[in-house]
Length: 473
Image 1 (tube, rainbow, N blue to C red):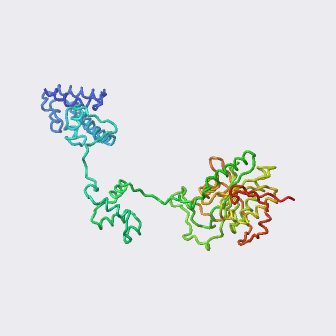
Image 2: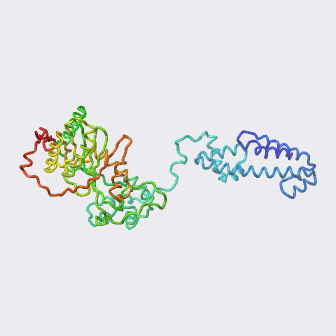
């Protein structure tokens, strides 16, 4: 009778831990234990405590006692293994899968209480899982795990005026004394103002409520380009057409502009790069010109046909004379070799600054360059408030800024090296040279000098599109 009891209770522990795979070593141990029970003269004296173990020793041999000890130890280890298995499965399953898994375990082992003890779960959880299995309510991906309506109510439901007061704080109307109009609309300030109105809300709940109301953290967007000229799009089409004509003839097309002036010295440069922990470069707190060793003025020339950049780094002033000198250096050092026997050059440039539409000195120095090199120079200016569309901005200057991010520009040589080593996946190469010349400001160009220019204006916006031809020699 007792042997049947042990078979019913202990056999599941030796039958593969409920996995359906039997272990031959465990089964052998179980069979030996049953043989031990049968061999005992008084089976009622055989149990699993030390007192009964001593009785079993008196009833049988010493080997029988060792067998019972081994079985007791193995049984305890199997229980530990099951607990670890349940702990691991709990982390892998959601709530519904977990209770249905425990329900299957309980049905397989024939005991809810044993699974409750080893898995640390509630009996109600397992019984609910059994009911779901019997009703064929298995878990399906994407469905709810809990019944609707459970949990704590949202604060917006329990506090009827909260949303209205919050929106009034975010968009104060007709109240010039509202603190939120003149201060940062941070979570801390909003929470303080809501508490003054009698609302109690946590930081996380306030963030969730703001998102639910359609608010997001947003920075300013630079989208307003100023007054748009009515012929803006037409000028872009004009530039595109001219570039296509020059490209078909194999003649040079360059985009020019002056990059932001940079202080030379141990100053902070925007951006971040990977560095060993605790080795970040320390720079000056203040970016005063008096602390600098001068300034670098990079004037860029970008060859649209060959995807090459040329940067003339000056140290004096960004003037029209400096701009044309940079173009001249590019032509003499790079352009002539790339475009031998070519006598026409197309320049696309902004409408302001040192290469501006109204800059007389710009046209005068271009005339000097045209005469010296026997070049016919066509200029196409971008319309007002469209400087960011200049090719050089996003094909050259942006990558220079990326290449020297987080690197203090401690000397002019560092500036030249960082610019020269700028590359892109598209094959951009850059040449940087130093320009130690001085370019005084305030130079005047007389009306007579302007009249002497060999300048031919285009029929479409001649102030934007014109060609400077060399004088006949």
